[in-house]
Image 1 (cartoon, rainbow, N blue to C red):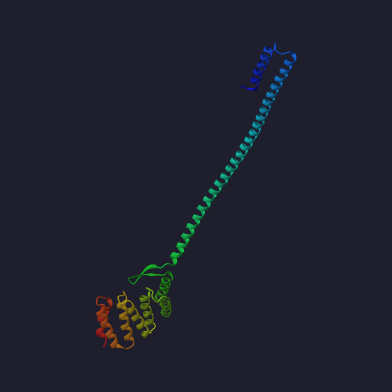
Image 2 (cartoon, rainbow, N blue to C red; image 1 turned 90 degrees about the vertical axis):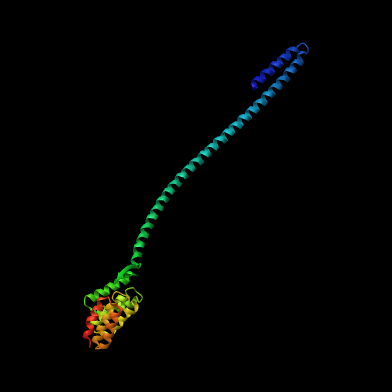
Length: 258
């Protein structure tokens, strides 16, 4: 029941009471009763109006507070959206940066591997022997052999001596001793030639050029007029390498050595 309905019911009650008691009270008492009832009605109305005003005020404040809360929430939502958009943009940029770095790293590693392969030992085969050799080592051997083939025997000696000093344990060493000995034979340095042919035989007695080295030692001994030693060397050649071409040549030369 709302306020107006309660007031109307109260007035009806007042009127009913007033009429019923009209005969019991005199006019003065009736007026006092009416005034009293009116004051009570006014008090009730004022209380009702005050409560309504307070409720309205509270509702207004609550609505205002709610509107401010909604505005703040909306502002926060917009801020979060903007932050999310910024983060998405950053993530996309980071993804592009990572992709670019990965590409650069791949290119860098590829270039590094390529440069590294230039310095890594590689398999080579020389005079039937396979071994690992550094790029510089192979280059120096090929260069020394090229000098020999040009007929520059003095230059070839220097080149092979330098090669053997730089790479004393090289797989090229036996072949280098062979060509060094031949270069020395060509320049009539027979004693040194013999020594280097023997170096080959000591390091690699099964070397492809070992029979030729033994035959070359015999040739050097002949040039040194040491026929006895030459005959012994040829006989040893035939025994050690009977199936070689050098052994066949030794068999032909032995009868001529006296």
